[in-house]
Length: 222
Image (tube, rainbow, N blue to C red; front, top):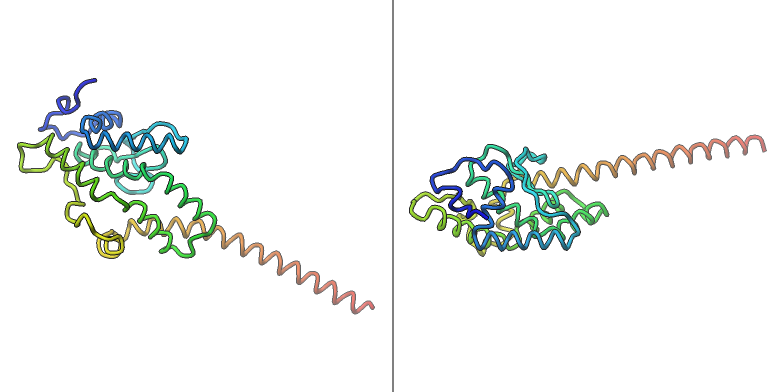
């Protein structure tokens, strides 16, 4: 296998042509290679196919997304941005069993409000990621761009203390549009439930009214 550090010169920040090229690149760095292996193991535990990284528009509207074994990254991003997105979404893959349990709980009605569900979803994305993402970004920057003062990957998580608590991150740092995505998922599912419940109530009310009218007619006949 070609050493991807040499295949993509330090001066090159052109987008990767394929998702496979991103996986190859990440496999050349020890810490991100370990993350890839952990993600593949999680997929196997869940009985899902191997990891795919696709350069296509995410359905969620974000720059990148992870759905089961598939990571989508917006085409045309610079190579460093593509790598940064991949690293973040790979951490989500490693939490896949928790994501599946979260979705099952959502469908079972365990979360009573959009905010409760959003907090639970964001907590899964938050757990243990800061330290790992920072370490991987530092390693890539050191090995790819060690002679430059400009980091190869601009890592937003460097601005937060690695021991930041979830409540502080959720309330002070996390963009509301990210939380709103999960709130909308809760509303979407629960609006269906409300419509179904409302239909049942209407059906029961009509049935009861019909019985009452019939009973009234029967009483008059008697």
